[in-house]
Amino acid sequence: MTDFEDQLQNLLSRHKSEAETYVTSTASYVTYKAFSDAFYEINGSTINSTITNDYISIDFYRLIQLVNKWINELDYIVDDINTRLYRLEIDTVDDINPMVDVRNKIEYDIIRTYGTLKAKIEEIETNFSNISIAYKTIVESSYNDMLIFHNNYTGNKGDFSDFKDVSVYIHGIDDDGGKFLSTMPDVSSEGDIVIHEQRNDDTEYFIVVADKHGNLSLSESYNEKEIKNTTEYKSGLARIHMVYETEFRNEHRQKTSNDLSKALIDLGLMYGDKNIKLHAHSYGGRRSWQFAVDYPEYVEAITTIGTPYETNKMAELGENIANIGEFIPGILNKYPLEDGNHIEIDTLTEHAGEGIALNDNAYGDMINTSLDEVVEEVYSYNPEVYAQIEDIYATAVVGKQMNNPLVWNADFAVSTHSQSGEVMGNFIDEAHVVHIFNHFIAHSAETTHDFFKNIMKNENDTIFR
Image (cartoon, rainbow, N blue to C red; front, side):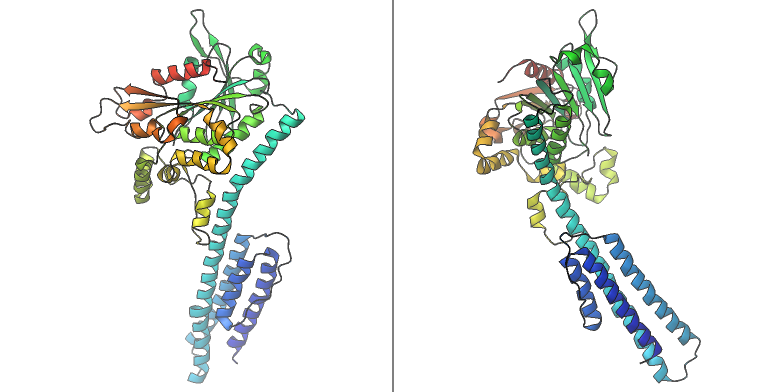
């Protein structure tokens, strides 16, 4: 055995020993399998590792760095061999061939195998990440349920627990709550309190005030401490209007439901006997329905405009255009490829073990799911909850393009048939059509249209239960 062969064997023995130490610490069988397969391919041996931990703990970055270190150490041997060969310090073929064999084994066998191992580690990391994100949704939902029960059982109130009537406004895809905030004077009453939950985690508070002519507007913004010192807050009689902005622009409906419920719980607005009315535009309607499915006992009514109740081909078009080049949808301020940080369990199951980074954002949801499927699924698992959903008063407002010859029977983005929620059957109690003029894309003008504002105002002033 030459010096280089001996050096290589010693190095591989150390690599194997380091692998055994690291893999044992992860307590992960798939990680053990990846390393064991790599060493079996190199020299026909497997690593010895005993999984003793009660939980898996993997530092994927550390594992990748470990393999990179091994590759660097092998590169040093290759450099030494090349230096010897180039200096012509060896006189015979018998001396040259063993070194060439060692170099070739390192470059074409071992380093390639280590490269495959790195790819496998990255694949394992992706799979673990998918599982973590998918089950995080379930954990968050369960945590919120337990928190609601705990607060109601112990009498643990939030700052706004004394307020009974709540309206929540949820924007559409790739949007924020700005338009809904601007409509507050038109859909509220004097003395009402407006809470604006912003995407950057800031919260601002307003009071609806009237001038001497009775015209309503929003006051200057208050912080949390200031709003508690107002007469309107101390009375506990006003309606709370919460303008909610999602964490992601195209956030999936289930993630919104989890995030929104947590925000309402923190404020004390899911405590006791609350009557929540949901108002939503576009994809916000799908978000609202998911919240209603999750917490029907709190939801009194849902009002939607321009909502794609059925699957939506425009979403598929958006994804296809984005896959050509992200700059294209970026020009229109649409981001269909943005990761919504949510994976549904059925998506995870469908692609289990493929090492593909998964996410279900609003675009994917609209492509694959009709809202009636979401509700019907509840009937299969919990008929009592289904009955509660049937009691929610639902209004679907259809926005219709009136002066754009390129569009037929739609508001440019969603068909009138889909907006009316016909697939929902008897769940929809009212359906209205609003004709929108002088807008190239009617869908973008629906939130602030007078017809829709009047519908929201009437819904806020009506007692449904």
